[in-house]
Length: 266
Ligand SMILES: [Zn+2]
Image 1 (cartoon, rainbow, N blue to C red):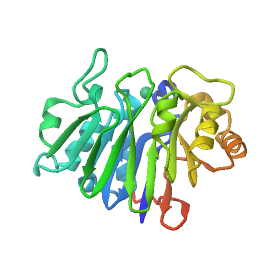
Image 2: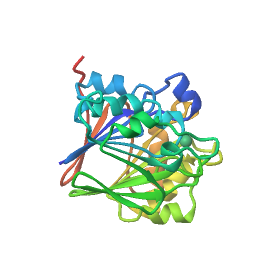
Image 3: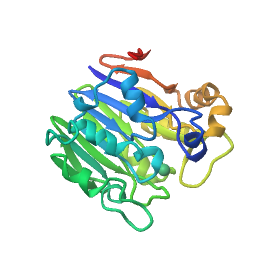
Image 4: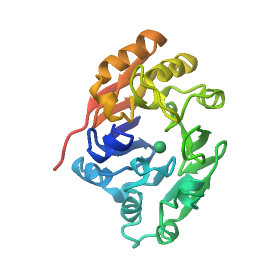
């Protein structure tokens, strides 16, 4: 079974600074454990659920904005048992790993060195986290080096679009997804450049036709404009079951896709 836990569902500058929603990224358990886009608070929320950061196998960062990378280094320390074991994989966009123009690097030379593998990625690449194959997808974002990810699990493809505006090459790259996770920063009638709005989410879900569309990475305005209403618009327009993520929500993917809430251990 594949299990996905939302350690945060906020995104964008104001939602992050004021923690309108948490910003701890997404924890994926699919034979291996992956922490995807760990923004501020990721390590706190992981601890609250009693998940040991030392059991993470890969830290993946889609692009070089702090709502996606801020806790990456501390999670790398967790993954390597504070540099006592040389293990784990770090993968990110070129901006995250190498630093490009105004962006990054988001991960220090020390943290790139203490893991067993560090990958600097562009769209259209493939790599493995243990047995799990992961592919990178293009984005159109203010960090021009940004990427999305596709997790080729035994139970189907989980596609993570990351921050992007909708252009043809992005839409094409997510075909075949069973679960489509969209970073929808802006609500209906409030699209801004480089980000997805609710209208974009409806159009993408309609093109891809996944079993489930998940909306996350909500900006401040989005949260105040009723995420349930935004998701209903996407579901009505696309005919696809659409879930507006909430902090600590869990999705289990086996024959069907089931929603639950994670339990606090602390
Ligand atoms: Zn961004």
